[in-house]
Image (cartoon, rainbow over all chains, first blue to last red; front, side):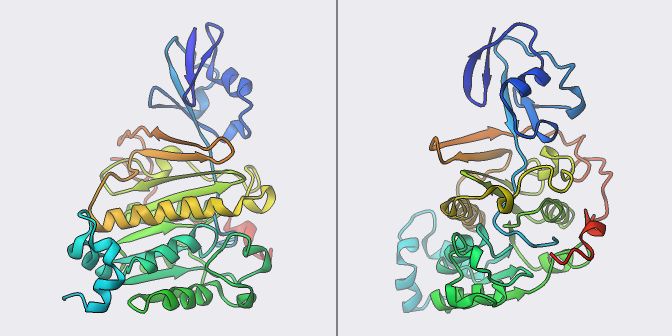
Length: 73
Length: 270
């Protein structure tokens, strides 16, 4: 089946889960990534149980720090 | 209040824009923007907002200028090393534009002081690089009904989103709580290309200006991501389920500000 991951179309195996996709895509901090499928959040505890479907569009949203290191540190 | 001849000349490239005009320029001169963090993001944002004639610019930062800051924090100069960042930033902004009143906060933002600091401002820029501060700014802005720009940068990547009360998701809709200390890399550990602060901090300034003049579409309900190595900008739609968010949702469970990791920070001397 074909899915879109971060805007790029890919051919993946039927039945692929979000948990497996996170591994396949080498997500740097998999336990802290936020995932959306077709502009809906996937609950963080539901990566294993969420199966992707043909045509799904998946986005990974990452924690990112910023300019100034020091406030409240 | 009418613009002076000098102001008409200084802001002529703004005034000629149909989206700004004399009316928009007056809005900028009457606006109050708070920048939290005078670092990689806050430095370019402060310079552009001062140049744009934002009448009052608040700048909050507890740190002093360090040699390692100067690779990206373009508001500070070599001669400023050791000086409070807010003082160095104030001098640079005042040198650019005497129209601007700069208010400095040489202190850490905490659950105790943040609501009092943000209350007088129209728009807030989050230029911090730690998650306790990012969640604190988000929660405080949601509770005080203040619009703000969130941003993050690391390595060759950056991202930003804008929160406007009632018009889309907040930071906590996307990220439930701060990751544990050192669970995700920081700029200090992983590095950041200097110009990334320039790109993303300038985009934050752009959002502030658009909000003030009331023109265009803000990054509400979307996260703009920038990958410099691939020169790829993407706008990712953010879901907004008002029933679920613990702070901006219809049944909030977080109703008091939280100082994350405060216990760990005590006595570390950082």
